[in-house]
Length: 107
Image 1 (cartoon, rainbow, N blue to C red):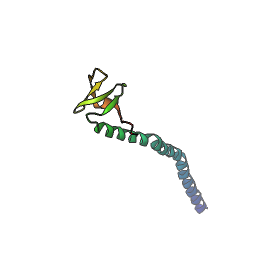
Image 2: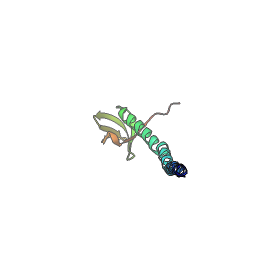
Image 3: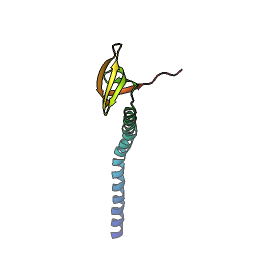
Image 4: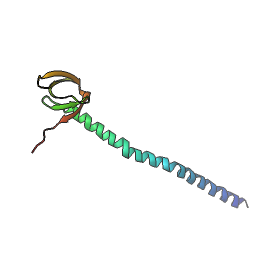
C-alpha cells in the first residue's frame, strides 16, 4: 500500500513538471519569434546605417532626415557641411542627421 502511494506521488510530480513546461513553452516560442522578426532585423539595419555614416566622404551626394539634398564639401569630426541648390548655400549638419547617400545610377 505504501509503495502504491509513493508511485502515485511520483507520477503526480512528473506530470506537474510537464504542466509547467507546457505553460512556459508558448512564452518562450513568442520570445524566439519576436527576436527573429523584430530584434535581429533592426540590429542589422542599425549596423548598416552605422557603416554608411562612417564611410561618408567629401563629394558624396546625401539626403538628410529632413529631406535636404546636397553635396558634402567639408567634414570635421561629426559635423558635415553640405552645399545645397544653385546658389551653393552651405548648411551645417551633424553626421547622425544623414539618412541616405545617393549613389549615381550606372548604365
